[in-house]
Image 1 (cartoon, helix red, strand yellow):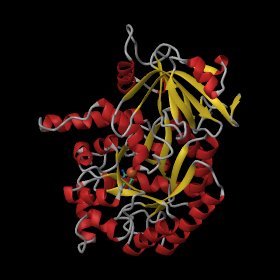
Image 2 (tube, protein in one colour; image 1 turned 45 degrees about the vertical axis):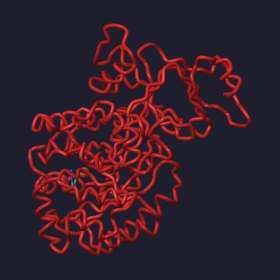
Image 3 (cartoon, rainbow, N blue to C red; image 1 turned 120 degrees about the vertical axis):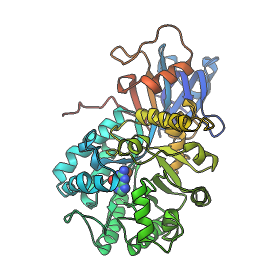
Image 4 (cartoon, rainbow, N blue to C red; image 1 turned 90 degrees about the vertical axis):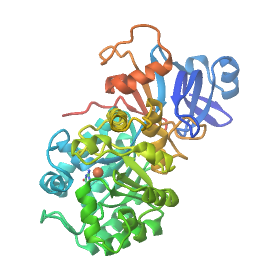
Length: 452
Ligand code: GUN
Ligand code: FE
């Protein structure tokens, strides 16, 4: 470890870096040198042409430099803007019912089990490990209604080094599962206790998010309480919106005095610039304009949208409205816990829209790469901290080797970095993700091996 002007440099990487900026979905930086300071922040990223003068300027030795190999590059960590940690136990199953039936038949009975902290500890360790292995450096989690199990999820994310927003779920009505609901008072009071207890731990990269499940699960009084709690504590908010037609119809019936589904959340003070709403398949242009005006964002969950036959989100239209948007796995409505899968499903969904209407402007892989990284961090209002390789941001990154020996693809000759990235996004998996960093800390490979 070396020191410059009392700023020790923790890691120095040299090679190809790829990331997104506001102006460019894919920026490729070949033969660059990136330095991470002792606080895990990016100290510099500069051309490696004159590495000798760089080493003098930043005070590192040639032996400190980690030189990337052929077919390797570094990209920003993936951001999962919507994942139900509590549903991980049944991921890959139970995809034969539409949303409302799916919730009552599969989801609520499983979520009820999290009052048992031993059950919670097992699943939460597994989902944080699995998502980290898959390159998710930031995850925005739904837990369950249970405060203590939700706190445990925060503890596990902190222990394993994942950046996380963690929500204790709030739901007080319209639930067919008798032993999985709360009163309005319980839900508000336990949300306050959850926030207080989680903030008290002072985990550097884990914070609470106010989590009304969705309008069908929360009465007006509860939504209003939660809006106040978020406002008073300047907290993030997450929920679901306009995922499925039957749900949209039920919201209309339950809240006839409101202009739209979006208006229900707006009038309960749940749409802020720190709100992320999952799905949004059936939002009108007028509703998207409300998202734009409030700064609320959308989590695009294409695997889930297809798997439980909810709908297809027109991401192009969301982007045209300048609404912030990132990708979500929505485990277990989505069957894959990997954002690489979400990237592929997002591209597929966009292509389906083009098949249906050839004038639809299909998303490019570069645009979807941005959704998975910078877009996600913007959707979670974390882009001043993470999302790309701007100096001063935390170093959240993946070291990718497209030619990993046991990996799922072949490279048949010299290829430019853009092709390597495209191949990785379409064909890669965790075997290609050699190292994962969150705020400069290497979190994958794990310090100790996971048990099954
Ligand atoms: N809407 C309300 N709850 C849920 C959930 O758990 N998953 C999905 N996909 N949609 C929801
Ligand atoms: Fe969801």
